[in-house]
Length: 437
Length: 191
Image 1 (tube, chains in turn red, yellow):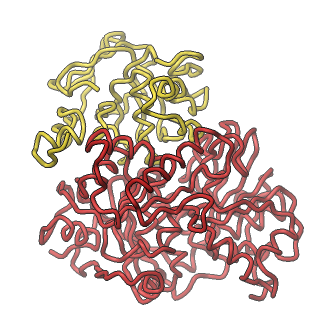
Image 2 (cartoon, helix red, strand yellow):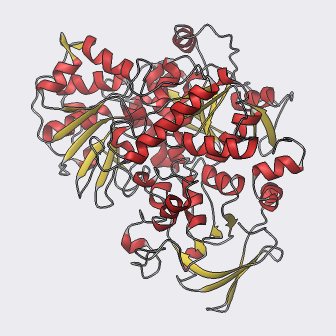
């Protein structure tokens, strides 16, 4: 019996020739990532358990990316960044992306690939549930808690239970012009439910996936946690290799699923049959098509986060927004500083993205997680009352973006942009084809 | 956290399905130090404060886990619906329940990271029930969990329910967390 990509990575990192789903094994970590919310308690547990003077197991493998509560007056939040700063200095860490410095990046899940840490065949753990994003690069990547992270910080290893793999095969040679990866993952989560992949791997495959960009693939793997998945993976290909090689010289060994690997289940989708999707409040699996919700009144639109704040997300939004007026407050938050810079240099219809957004009256935030998860009360774009918001982010549980009274609809950047123009939920197909890139 | 073979007895607090970590401890509160004894108490105070009022303390609703201006709860056993603890990886979630005085959670299924954090951090014991007990137990019912017998006795309603054995994580639960387990097994030697 062959093995899946995920089983092979786990086997290799546990020193075994093969592993089977359900088995618990200890694996060596290639990268441990933490941020400003979970980093300080992780550091605290590390010191308590390994000693005040303990050194991290491998400083080249520890990556600290503050991104959650950055542009806030909250003294406790700022103290958290101070704790990271002191630890990075004390441990002489080479991969600390400090706030206020030239190294500052923004959202960790996008910063990790930008900085070359998402290498095929490797094993990445992070103290954030959306760490699974890195699976787009053929890496095993999963979110963990502070205690587990502290364990890795000192010991370099962790126990994992080998997950069963669900395979999602996509047919179609290209993405239809109105469809985005966000529509696809919302469809899948709606089909299998928010616990439809609990404890399992979601593997995305088929010609439809080959046709996707790396950023599209990241949108898919980012949201596997919204179906309860342990990790999401896409087999590496030439696009993966090109992306990673542009960002790191480090050696890596891509891994692929065997053709006779055993899968928990196989789902098949045809890209051409798929349509713009929305997740209604208050759950990512509360699916509807954009058309079904046409006319639903909105107060706010939000384009940002690890799921929906990548360059391609802003290009998509700008294609729709260019030359239109917006009826509702629209917030634009680039995931990273690199993306923020590219908003200045990337053009749609000959005009820089940043100018398209500014001219339409969008409010532009600084690279960070911002209001995706609510955060301190002064967080940019936070829903502080009973606002109804359409957002490119990844969660819409009660109170996720701030107030318990608010309501969040999740959708693609196309749908969010079209809805911002109308002031109510709008299928973006009416706006496609009118722009030239 | 209690060791798995000691019975846990106390008052139930009942919630519905898909209770996510933002409902367990809203993100705005993740800034307090877990080390500082005074700040730490706020995790108890705000535990489950993100649950919509009508869904908090079922079947009636409108009951907070922790009363306003208090830091600990009178309820020490949470009974939830499927997929308890979904959402983010914040370990502050099981920690906040522990700080509020919760000892165990009974649900038909748990989200993976929350389950793992509960066990590895030694905060609360996550017991999987066979049936969805959130449909049977009422907030305030007196429960007794006996893992040796794999039962939950509802003393108020005079009923008994079945729970699953802890399986492969039993050793970690018994040790009190992953560090204690690893030391016992000789995997790490420090401290």
